[in-house]
Picture (cartoon, rainbow, N blue to C red):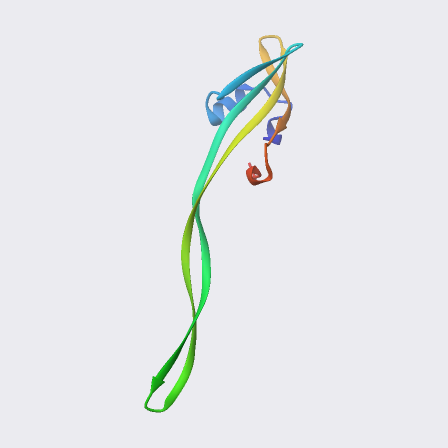
Length: 104
């Protein structure tokens, strides 16, 4: 969201669609909020071991199993903007929590 600072609010609208909320902050300022969700799977590896018995004796066998745990992350991104003519120019941004940090 930092990349939008100094640009028209039309830029994030073109990228993310209309904002979820628009809040009038007074003195020609507004906050524009987008609800952005991400989801996927995180691999979780678990070490395993077993003892194998055979005609030659016994031996230990080691391995690893991987399972995939689903996740969903919902974030409310906020851009603040100052009115300039008929447009609003982004002058700041907020992310509500560290889990919402991403490289866009």
